[in-house]
Each structure stands twice: as C-alpha cells, then as structure tokens.
Amino acid sequence: SAVISQKPSRDICQRGTSLTIQCQVDSQVTMMFWYRQQPGQSLTLIATANQGSEATYESGFVIDKFPISRPNLTFSTLTVSNMSPEDSSIYLCSVGERDMVNYGYTFGSGTRLTVV
Amino acid sequence: ELKVEQNPLFLSMQEGKNYTIYCNYSTTSDRLYWYRQDPGKSLESLFVLLSNGAVKQEGRLMASLDTKARLSTLHITAAVHDLSATYFCAGGTGGFKTIFGAGTRLFVKA
Image 1 (cartoon, rainbow over the protein chains, first blue to last red):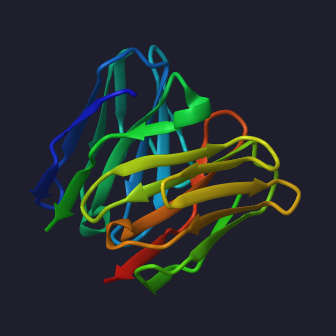
Image 2 (image 1 turned 180 degrees about the vertical axis):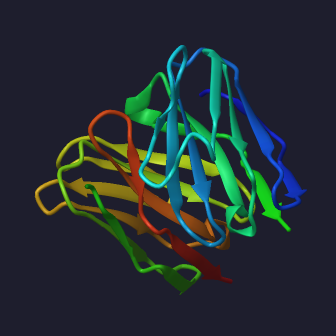
C-alpha cells in the first residue's frame, strides 16, 4: 500500500499565524484528500486536491482559509491561515490505493494542531 | 447528501465476548469502508465492502454489507484487549467523496 509522510506531526501555534502541512506519497496518485478531525470527533473532508487544477472544497471550507497546493502527483500542502483556537484539530491527508477494492484509502499519520 | 450513523458510540466489553457495531447510511452508497484508529494514531483500513451481501473477515473481525437495508455491521468475536480502538465506518458517494460515521470507541476489559 501507499506510504504517506506527513509533516509536522504536531505544532502549537499562536492565533493569527499560519501553518503549512505537507504530505509526500511514495507513489504517484491522481487525487489527494485533506481531512479535519476535531478532538474526539469524526473526520470531515476539507477538500480534494488534483494535480494541475484548483482544489475542490467542501461546504464550510474556503480557499482563503485553507489554501492547498498540489504541484505534482506525489506531494500536496494544506495551509491553515489566520488561525484561531477553533482550528485546533488533527489534520490528515489521504490517498486512494491502486487496489481500491481491497484497501480503500490510506491516511497520513496526521498533524495535531493546537492554536493558543 | 449521504449521512452515516454508527451505534453504539461507546462500547465497553469483556474479553472473550462477542459484539456487533452497526453502521446505517441514508442514501445509496457504492462502497462502505471500515477503519480502525488507535489513540493518537492515524486510520488503518480494515475492510472495503462493495456489493450487497459482501462479507469479509480478518482475525476476530468480520464486516458485512446489506445494501437494501443500507446497513453494514462489524462483528467482533471473542474480543481481546488489543482490539481496543475507535472504529469508523465510512460511505462512498459519487466520485471519491467519503463520509465518515461518528466512530465507535471500543474498550475491551481484560
């Protein structure tokens, strides 16, 4: 299965600042997905990132707040901009496996963000 | 829009016992996933269910799908402490969007 390296694993940030999270995949993938998991909650899809096109954002998420880059088929970044304590969450990237029938999606290890 | 509901949300059980986690979804979903998440860790894919009547088993876990009832189950047989984790089901909608249930926090007592 795909291996995803996600950085940083955790960070504590001041409100009003921005943090960029990186995901590197060991194989080429068409689509990458970014999720948010608030403490003790389920996962919510933020956006889908395709290489060479604008990311597609889900309802409640906007590009100005969560800009995404997808410069090639193995890499993506998510920036959390102008942070407030409400942005404290775990952020995860995900890719679909080549063998979707048996393996579904693989997730990065997550970035635990605390905004103070 | 697809909604996915899991129950129970919290489950405490004794080692050696059997139990089932239920996952209902609101509209047609063309695929159903089960994931495991250990505290402070990412998600691990357990099962992918694609068709009505699909059943998959791995160790003490068995997942099934009934598309007519819009129901998937995750059955735990003879639970052991190592199965303690949060289990998520998730449904796939058109394209690649995946909607997650709230998760079931399972605690297996020795």
